[in-house]
Amino acid sequence: MQKQEIAISTEFIKLEGLLKFAGIVETGGEAKVMIQEGAVSVNGEVCLMRGKKLRPGDVVTLPGVSLTIK
Image (cartoon, rainbow, N blue to C red; front, side):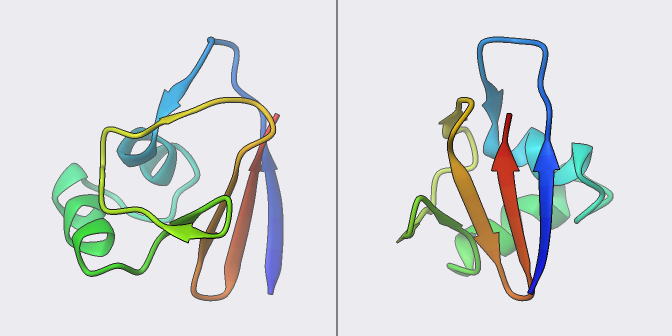
């Protein structure tokens, strides 16, 4: 599994935005589909909310990728 640390300069980043920022998807539509299909977990739990606010310390897991927010 590939692990990445993503540094943000704001208080939070929305899940949909993180997937685009990290280069996992190219568009918000792709992110929406991936999230709604249940392919994304936040801190070990499947997350179906594309607007979920992620803060430093949160871990987002997708098939083959783990993203840690810094």
